[in-house]
Length: 397
Image 1 (cartoon, rainbow, N blue to C red):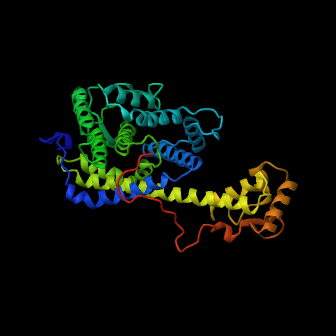
Image 2: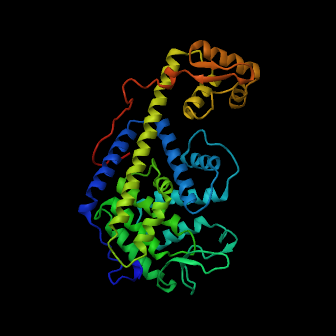
């Protein structure tokens, strides 16, 4: 028997006492990250949102085996955020479809969930009405008579059936119960538990011919936006799921593959991903604050730096030790800063004279690396962190 075949379906059971340590840790990470975010400057906050949008779009597509081009994603996300550095480039249909879904999930979080909203999300993913080359039903729940199954096809052998969803004829009733619960449970159930249950519930029903995973994760985004009371995307939960995709698939299959309404293990794994997402965001913000301090100190101590020299230093700092193997070359400086070779050599030499770069090698092997003190400019203590975080509670942005 499967989850939806349980006599208790869909009365999910969760052991809140067993979950309490994980929930407390996730809320601490949330409070720390949201507290630190309130101290970011507008530019830093914009960069963080751009990173969050890009990471979420790329990861939710990757989970489904679809690869989006990062430059296209960042350009589209920057345009939607109204950032000045948004680049004009040809729009990619798959990128736009994914970001349309993610944007709708956040913007519509102030509204009650409806069938039309879910239909619109799924339709946004398939604007031409096709999944790859196969024509599918979009903007509506599935209605085909054959079973909806999750399978692994095998050449010359029978497919491996991992899961079979409820009949298509039951979709309207099944989804109505989910929607009614989602709307009534807001502020009645812990927000992280609610998001986890909404996701596993939708995946168990599998209401659409395609796009169920991405719609399910968009529903999580809506639930978390409602819980955190913010429309700013500063983190990526899907990225954490992608990083542990084996665990994601295994936990979903374990939760839906048996007629046991106790889904505590799934919720615990989910809450752990939320915890990791906030920790990752906190690290990103620490990096942003360190870079801001670096830029301020460079302007104060070296006001004669040219825009191209500043750009090169920023690129070297962002790339870290592994970004440019053995340092940046004159040729890479030319390509990065769009200057002549003579200008590149002169500006690199000046940076070495200032003590900001160190030259290594000779001839064609000449490279320029960030001086160690510059790379560690924010390390005034053993750990070098800036923490304005509030350890508990929620902080509105």
